Image 1 (tube, one colour):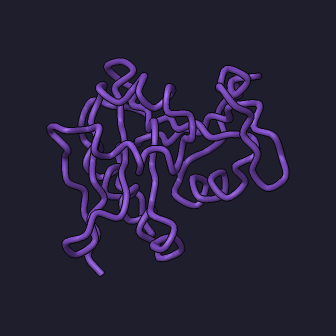
Image 2 (cartoon, rainbow, N blue to C red):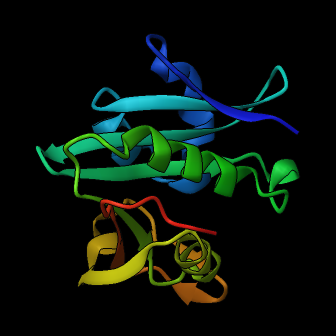
Length: 158
Protein backbone atom coordinates (compact mmCIF):
# COMPACT_ATOMS: atom_id res chain seq x y z
CA UNK A 1 0.00 0.00 0.00
CA UNK A 2 1.54 3.28 -1.14
CA UNK A 3 1.06 6.21 1.25
CA UNK A 4 2.12 9.69 0.27
CA UNK A 5 1.71 13.33 1.30
CA UNK A 6 0.32 15.89 -1.11
CA UNK A 7 0.33 19.64 -0.35
CA UNK A 8 -3.05 21.37 -0.16
CA UNK A 9 -2.60 24.73 -1.85
CA UNK A 10 -6.17 26.05 -1.64
CA UNK A 11 -9.64 25.28 -0.33
CA UNK A 12 -8.36 24.26 3.10
CA UNK A 13 -11.92 24.55 4.44
CA UNK A 14 -12.67 21.36 2.49
CA UNK A 15 -10.45 19.46 4.96
CA UNK A 16 -12.10 20.77 8.12
CA UNK A 17 -13.94 17.48 8.73
CA UNK A 18 -10.62 15.62 8.66
CA UNK A 19 -8.96 18.10 11.03
CA UNK A 20 -11.86 17.82 13.47
CA UNK A 21 -11.18 14.07 13.77
CA UNK A 22 -8.08 14.98 15.78
CA UNK A 23 -9.28 18.26 17.29
CA UNK A 24 -13.04 18.52 17.88
CA UNK A 25 -12.95 22.26 18.65
CA UNK A 26 -13.72 23.90 15.29
CA UNK A 27 -12.79 27.35 16.59
CA UNK A 28 -9.33 26.08 17.55
CA UNK A 29 -8.87 24.32 14.19
CA UNK A 30 -9.88 27.46 12.29
CA UNK A 31 -7.36 29.48 14.31
CA UNK A 32 -4.48 27.64 12.60
CA UNK A 33 -6.10 26.42 9.38
CA UNK A 34 -4.63 29.13 7.16
CA UNK A 35 -1.12 28.98 8.60
CA UNK A 36 1.71 26.62 7.72
CA UNK A 37 1.48 23.65 5.38
CA UNK A 38 -1.50 21.36 5.07
CA UNK A 39 -0.89 17.95 3.56
CA UNK A 40 -3.41 15.37 2.37
CA UNK A 41 -2.50 11.82 3.33
CA UNK A 42 -3.26 9.75 0.26
CA UNK A 43 -3.48 5.97 -0.17
CA UNK A 44 -3.79 4.99 -3.81
CA UNK A 45 -6.12 7.69 -5.10
CA UNK A 46 -8.10 8.20 -1.86
CA UNK A 47 -7.53 10.94 0.70
CA UNK A 48 -7.57 9.13 4.05
CA UNK A 49 -6.23 11.85 6.33
CA UNK A 50 -4.45 15.14 6.81
CA UNK A 51 -1.32 16.45 8.44
CA UNK A 52 -0.92 20.12 9.35
CA UNK A 53 2.54 21.58 9.99
CA UNK A 54 3.56 25.11 11.02
CA UNK A 55 6.93 26.77 11.42
CA UNK A 56 7.43 28.14 14.94
CA UNK A 57 10.85 29.67 14.27
CA UNK A 58 13.90 29.08 12.05
CA UNK A 59 14.76 25.86 13.89
CA UNK A 60 11.37 24.57 15.04
CA UNK A 61 8.29 23.05 13.43
CA UNK A 62 5.06 21.97 15.09
CA UNK A 63 2.56 19.39 13.93
CA UNK A 64 -0.75 21.01 14.75
CA UNK A 65 -2.90 18.15 13.57
CA UNK A 66 -2.62 14.66 12.12
CA UNK A 67 -5.80 12.72 11.48
CA UNK A 68 -6.66 9.48 9.73
CA UNK A 69 -10.18 8.31 8.86
CA UNK A 70 -11.26 5.74 11.47
CA UNK A 71 -11.58 2.92 8.94
CA UNK A 72 -7.93 3.40 7.90
CA UNK A 73 -6.42 3.47 11.39
CA UNK A 74 -4.23 0.62 12.58
CA UNK A 75 -2.68 0.09 9.13
CA UNK A 76 0.55 2.08 9.73
CA UNK A 77 -0.70 4.88 7.47
CA UNK A 78 -0.18 7.53 10.17
CA UNK A 79 3.32 6.25 10.93
CA UNK A 80 4.22 6.16 7.24
CA UNK A 81 2.89 9.71 6.74
CA UNK A 82 4.74 10.95 9.82
CA UNK A 83 8.01 9.36 8.73
CA UNK A 84 7.54 10.87 5.25
CA UNK A 85 7.12 14.28 6.86
CA UNK A 86 10.25 13.79 8.98
CA UNK A 87 12.25 12.84 5.88
CA UNK A 88 10.85 15.83 4.00
CA UNK A 89 12.06 18.14 6.78
CA UNK A 90 15.37 16.35 7.46
CA UNK A 91 18.43 18.06 6.03
CA UNK A 92 16.83 21.49 6.20
CA UNK A 93 17.80 23.98 8.90
CA UNK A 94 15.25 22.60 11.37
CA UNK A 95 16.42 21.06 14.64
CA UNK A 96 13.13 19.83 16.05
CA UNK A 97 9.47 19.06 15.46
CA UNK A 98 7.01 19.46 18.32
CA UNK A 99 3.60 17.87 18.61
CA UNK A 100 1.04 18.34 21.36
CA UNK A 101 -1.58 15.89 22.50
CA UNK A 102 -4.05 15.79 25.34
CA UNK A 103 -3.24 14.08 28.63
CA UNK A 104 -6.24 11.84 27.84
CA UNK A 105 -4.92 10.79 24.40
CA UNK A 106 -3.14 7.64 25.53
CA UNK A 107 -2.95 6.09 22.04
CA UNK A 108 -1.52 9.31 20.58
CA UNK A 109 1.17 9.47 23.24
CA UNK A 110 2.16 5.88 22.40
CA UNK A 111 2.02 6.57 18.63
CA UNK A 112 4.40 9.52 18.76
CA UNK A 113 6.89 7.73 21.01
CA UNK A 114 6.92 4.75 18.65
CA UNK A 115 7.79 7.21 15.87
CA UNK A 116 10.83 8.73 17.57
CA UNK A 117 9.27 11.54 19.59
CA UNK A 118 10.14 12.05 23.26
CA UNK A 119 8.25 13.78 26.04
CA UNK A 120 9.25 17.43 26.38
CA UNK A 121 6.86 19.58 28.45
CA UNK A 122 3.30 20.20 29.65
CA UNK A 123 1.00 23.18 29.17
CA UNK A 124 -1.38 22.90 32.15
CA UNK A 125 -5.10 23.55 31.64
CA UNK A 126 -4.75 24.01 27.85
CA UNK A 127 -8.03 22.25 27.10
CA UNK A 128 -9.98 24.37 29.56
CA UNK A 129 -9.96 26.97 26.74
CA UNK A 130 -12.11 24.71 24.58
CA UNK A 131 -15.81 25.52 24.15
CA UNK A 132 -16.80 22.06 25.41
CA UNK A 133 -15.04 19.58 27.66
CA UNK A 134 -13.23 16.77 25.88
CA UNK A 135 -13.13 13.23 27.28
CA UNK A 136 -11.13 10.28 25.96
CA UNK A 137 -10.59 6.92 27.58
CA UNK A 138 -12.77 8.07 30.50
CA UNK A 139 -10.32 10.91 31.22
CA UNK A 140 -10.99 14.63 30.82
CA UNK A 141 -8.53 16.40 28.53
CA UNK A 142 -7.00 19.13 30.68
CA UNK A 143 -3.29 19.46 29.86
CA UNK A 144 -1.41 19.56 26.57
CA UNK A 145 1.53 17.16 26.60
CA UNK A 146 4.25 18.17 24.16
CA UNK A 147 6.61 15.69 22.57
CA UNK A 148 9.60 16.55 20.41
CA UNK A 149 11.43 14.86 17.55
CA UNK A 150 15.07 15.97 17.44
CA UNK A 151 16.90 15.86 14.13
CA UNK A 152 20.45 14.65 14.29
CA UNK A 153 23.15 14.70 11.63
CA UNK A 154 22.80 10.99 10.92
CA UNK A 155 19.82 9.25 9.43
CA UNK A 156 18.30 6.99 12.07
CA UNK A 157 18.80 3.31 11.42
CA UNK A 158 15.85 0.93 11.82
